[in-house]
Length: 529
Image (cartoon, rainbow, N blue to C red; front, side, top):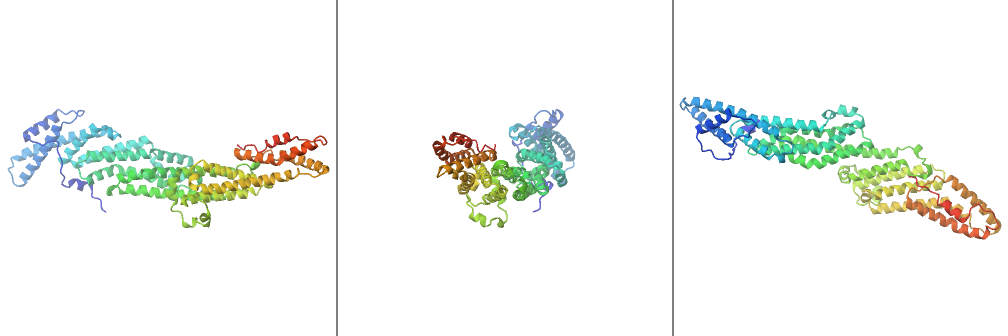
């Protein structure tokens, strides 16, 4: 749809209201205008009487011009020239006063009632007396300057809004630019909203098409430049996991501001701003989906050479992924919108079998990333030569995953069924650790005769001493699980050892009393943190 030029809009017939009907004579109006001009004080408020007299003179001027065009006496020509010259002078004064009033209107439009009322009546008079273009030109120039000054004060670096700049900037510097954008975006949109409100108040008597055109001229260039920044970043930023959250920050801010942007820039002259906001959101969505894919790929590519974690403790990869996902879950609502466009092949048979809260694309995506992580942890567990240590590693890492999920929005996203299923797996891992790490030692304690007793005692002492040395760095990170395993091992060894000790300690030299065994068991599995 073609946009009507503002010049044509101002030329359209328009009815303007005056505060009070004019009943005075032309000579009275000339006297009022002449006196006001000769005694002009630019710092004082304008007189409503002066504005009414000015409008009266303009109406008379139109009448004289019409009479002259129909062959009226040329004697009126001098009167017409006089009134025209007087009106020109009056308009120059009003234009200067209009500038001063506009300059005094700060960004807080709601607190500027008197100044706005003055500017409104001046604009109404200038429009009514045929000086609409001058009035609008002055208004646009002043408000554009005001908006530019606000942008300068906000310190948004517009030079960074270029593809070649984005490509060259180090991430640390670009991250600061992004944070600056997200911090000031609400302020910029509010400034545009203030301009929209002010424009519609100052030019209240003008057609809406005129007001929309004036507002668009003032704000569109600045708004377009500002709203292009997220799109430029999204299109030319090399995707990597650490950049995801800044992209999400921009998406959330822009998404929250979109209703205001659509409302303000709803007219045809401003549709480019509305379109740019939508385009930036779309490009951010695509970039975020790309980074999520990169994140999954980074987990898969984590090298096995980083697998050896002392004592079966929590792997750095597990900590990194879970901290990442926990933070990611704070963007739950936005991620639902962003991930909805993921390709259908993401929903494999794995997801059909998964116990997820709602089967949404977000829960599916999070569950898949966790599945990839758990597979990687499984492969790392295989690098341990000791089966008990391998089970301990699996239990520690899965328990850490579950603990992180319980403490954030991930629990809601995944649901109780998923959590319960993996809680059962964590317990099985720990049972496997206890069974493979302590069952053989426990089997040394049941004896049938004295010779077997002594031989079993020596083997038990040797294995227990070996365990103290080899397992001194083994850890169980979760305090509750650590205590439970200690009690389980104690129940496996101490009662049987105490029974044997009571029967044989007077005949055989022993290295450990039952209390020694118990105390040493309590020293196993120090906290990895």
